Length: 161
Image (cartoon, rainbow, N blue to C red; front, side, top):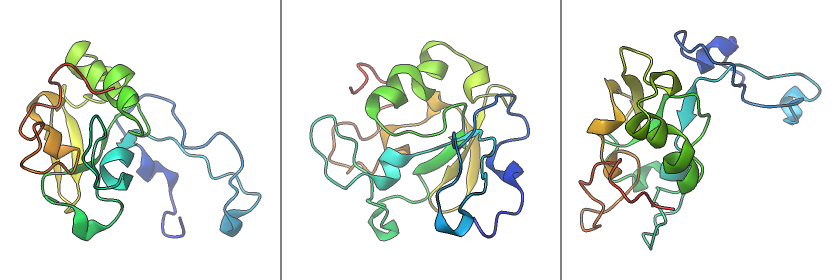
């Protein structure tokens, strides 16, 4: 993080939570021995960005960190306001974190703290305010138009496991 001079950029000023990015001393050689913990109030879409492009069963296809593999950069959310720091597995995303907290429980303190809306950062760099209710599978995962999940609301049940 050589260009991040202030850890405040990692959390929305409206976020009242206390999540931090790391629970110990940084092991990166560039910062060896220093404590680089900071408050975090955004979720990073590990599944949608880091997962491979495979599209089988309940696996959610990503773009394998290859930007050119992202089918719809203007539609795919890569970060958003959240008390959850990462979207790293299906059960976490749907089961007890973002989707469940908003769609099932209507908990505005989990990420929809801007008049019950969240800010979403998309792969092309633009940011848009909205709610999970208005987003679809292709807004989070690199699904093909032929995928049966394409155009389904992200809160459509049953949730993937």
